[in-house]
Image (tube, rainbow, N blue to C red; front, side):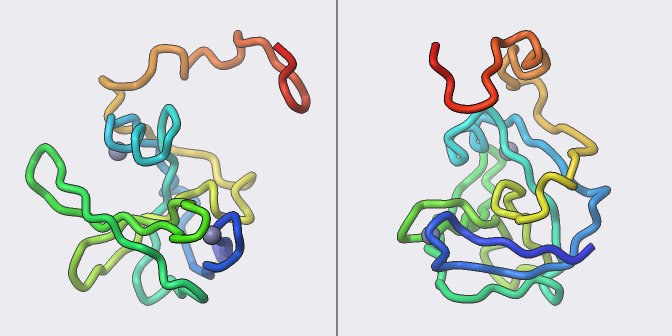
Length: 136
Ligand SMILES: [Zn+2]
Ligand SMILES: [Zn+2]
C-alpha cells in the first residue's frame, strides 16, 4: 500500500510503500516515553520504499535494556516522531503511524511488550467520550 505523511509543522514529509498487515503497537516503557503517550503504533517500510523530503530529521540514539541502539528520528521544529531505524545503513524504517495521512485505514495487527501496557488501554470504550474537546 502506498502511503504518505509528515510531521505536524510540515517541514518533513515522506512517501512509502508498506504492508498494512504489519501495523503493530508497542507498549514498552521506551515507546511510552518517546511517544509521550500510552503506546506507540508503527509500521515497517523497506529502505528502498521510504522516501523522506524536507528535513532532515534530528536523530536521537536510544540504547535499549539489551544494549541494542536504535535511531529515533523526529522533526527538530515541532518534535513529531517520524520513524526509528538501525543506527547504520538501515534496511527498514519503522514509521510512526500517527504521521501517516492514511492512518485511519491502518489497524494494528499485533501488540508487543504487553507486560508493561497501561491497564486501561484495553478498556478505552468504558472511558467517558466526547466527539470533540473534552470538557471534563
Ligand atoms: Zn515538524
Ligand atoms: Zn516499544
